[in-house]
Image 1 (tube, rainbow, N blue to C red):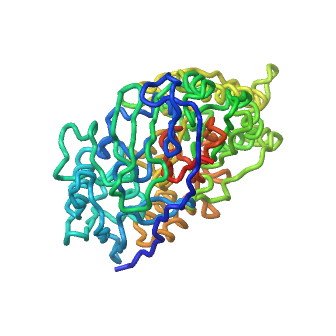
Image 2 (image 1 turned 60 degrees about the horizontal axis):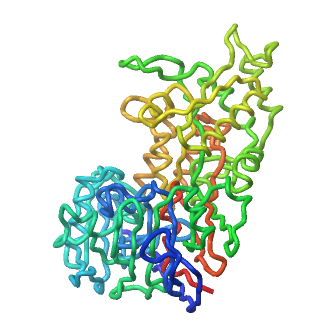
Image 3 (image 1 turned 90 degrees about the horizontal axis):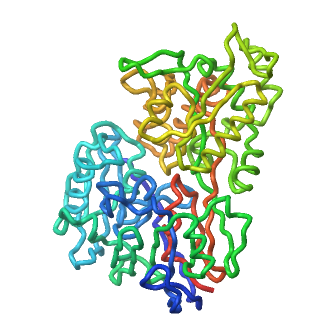
Length: 533
């Protein structure tokens, strides 16, 4: 067995603060009392409220609700550098063939109803998630088996080197107390107990007095769900301690508040269908004769001024993106390119797309035209699409933009670029976007490269996590093939959007790791370490 040595997660000790500020307590919108110094009120967007509740089997802890142990505890967690550390686990080993993961868990953990957490609860949780998960894919797991009270074996259908990242998003639930109403009345072993949920309004968490880790400094955490305008107004009125916001508000000021900006891997980019125009069996368009040309795709990648886009659309609150995994341990920095409009024009000329009299390129009498789709109601994506449209016009490509609903966006993206949002704390994001499916192409946009598939398959089959990082990098570019600029470039990544928050100037928010896609629960991953100055 290969022993996986990981650092234990340490809670940073913080000194007590005094945060005297007028805020609401029980009733959203009131401003009558002073919040205690060991509590905090956070405003999140309305989409952050988990529709399916707080059950890991139905998405809580994954995707846009990604969190570290809050209500439930997880076997592993991701660190600030996005590697793996332990939470419930104390040891982890993987067999030489990568087919069995053996995990030892702590013996001092209790659920908040007083019952001990054992390996049977871990087994029950993983079988429940495997059978019911609507967010995560657990088809790689054959079964979980309790070897004894503190040891679990995960037996795989196939080797899966990044299994520790999957374990970081699955909160352990109690088998004895799991039922139909669990999502609304969750019992866990994490840092907090959910005491109250007023749907559509707020959730109140209180510190778990029997938590096995360091005692949380923040004893009470209230999360309010508000649209962006309401969150801004609540901050203006001093009714919240921290409120999410966007770049459109970043030139404003609020007395007694500071604007916090956190780097993310919450990226925006467009797919460029890498297949000739055709249709599927249902008559839906697939492929695009303009973007099927790799020289056109390369021209677009270097013909977009990302810094201009960040300055004008995001008010400077973002970073240039060159992949779906910038800054992650598995990112290949060969993906980075420089803005080169002259080089882009030369590539389009080489591809036979010559500038026409109206400033739009043509080839064989066909105009260079695109429709860039964006999700209706998302003002940032709309603005990014409009900026992309303007920059493509400078290259001689006539683009129009169109807002669409997600009910049709996925299908239409098979033939036209769509302004996407991605970003996760796992290399599977690469696999999900670029790997060929049984139908002979990638899932979200037509693309296929057998060599890329081989590297990603080998990365998953590796028995050493760090070895897998190198294979993920080679899938991006091995010196000869891949999906960056000198390769196939079927996606153009534009920017990583900073997550912005109005924070009470006396509130010290603990250091954040890179936030994933979704401007929601990630901010409170370490809320137990926050303090008042």
